[in-house]
Image (cartoon, rainbow, N blue to C red; front, side, top):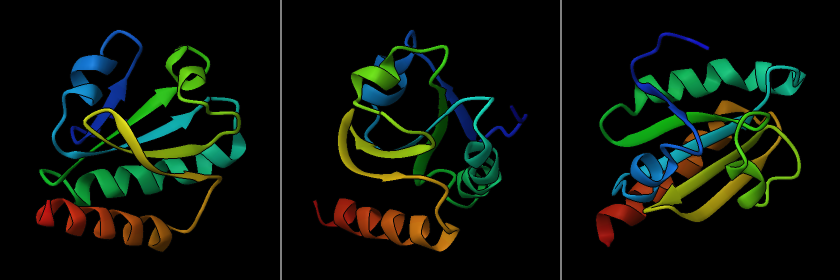
Length: 115
């Protein structure tokens, strides 16, 4: 795990406060240390955390250590969840290109501005 101050660590214990009560679009990277594709997309998630600091909340949820991943219906990792006030609005499964994630973030931010 990095020391990136813009990258949150989500857990079962802090999920309600950190994700459920967040008015910002929240992006959750559901990962595990043994997962190869997770290691590929990890640095991309860190870049997005920096690039969208203050606009989007970005964090990681370790699927091995937290039951929240199962409760969210995550069956394959990495899974990138897009949530607003704790409710899922989108998801991407697998190590996808950064541009695909940027496009999803931008479309959800645009929708947020109109709401």
